[in-house]
Length: 376
Ligand code: ADP
Image (cartoon, rainbow, N blue to C red):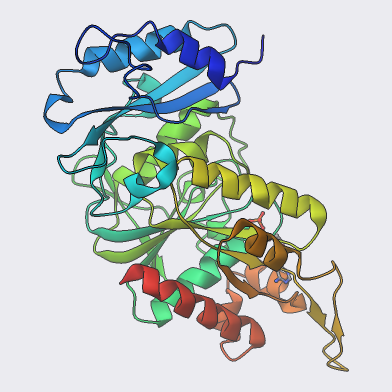
């Protein structure tokens, strides 16, 4: 299978006629930046708001020519409406698509069966004001730990908060909350009710399947599972939904970034070089699909010996702060290694609940405070 480039995609798209049925969509400047990940090609085409429906065949034609390219597994193509008074220049990079109140909105999405039903638009989730993705390029850096403690700190600040464990492969929320054998109720046809604990509304694949039964997911199924967790769960009313993303920069992340209006992403990293390389990929991925980076958190940043109070920079702390500075994104804080975290988490009580006065919890309150301005 050959490695395709965005130039290859652009060349193919020159075959697709634009809304005037004369010039092609590339010459007309309607094609956004093209993002390619693991053989999947993501891009959008700008169309006049009122003609979006009528131009669906154009979107399909673009999808078809790209999918015909050797090396392309799927093309995920959206139509982006340029509302009157817009700039007339579409690029998915400037981030404006993902902001509420923006002049642009995605009006139609690839009709792929695997993208899931009812996801044709980048619509808000009913009753949910803000969605924050917590992501890391790499597993094991404390993303899930961060997501739940951050959600608790936001709830403590008075925000009605939900937490979606979108890690389909390795759901952690049942263990982190101690909700091991509880199943969400199905209501109103196909909708699912959340579970609730510690004042948070919760949903996880782990609530629906047995932990000891390994799940084999194909990429398309991951995409539709994440979408259904967003669309088919009764989340509202919420001020903020924190989404604990699966590790990496694959399908699930892109689906989420493409299909729901994310307020932004929080990137979790440990200080080591390798973790930082992955964090950087995460920042780049979200930036490319127009999702603002709300900030970077350095987890396991340092260690305070409980007996002497002496501080040890085990992994060489500060890497994430430098990276954030370099990438010109906010740095949200340094969370120490706390030997109690693992045991408490495994016992189903997040540190924020078990030790509200600890440095760990105080730091999460500070991070929640920094994020609060994005949620007003
Ligand atoms: P991820 O979601 O990135 O895979 P987890 O949140 O599951 O990571 O954390 C991985 C392991 O590290 C877990 O056992 C967790 O309890 C532990 N851990 C996370 N953050 C800390 C921390 N600040 N101090 C000590 N242990 C931590």
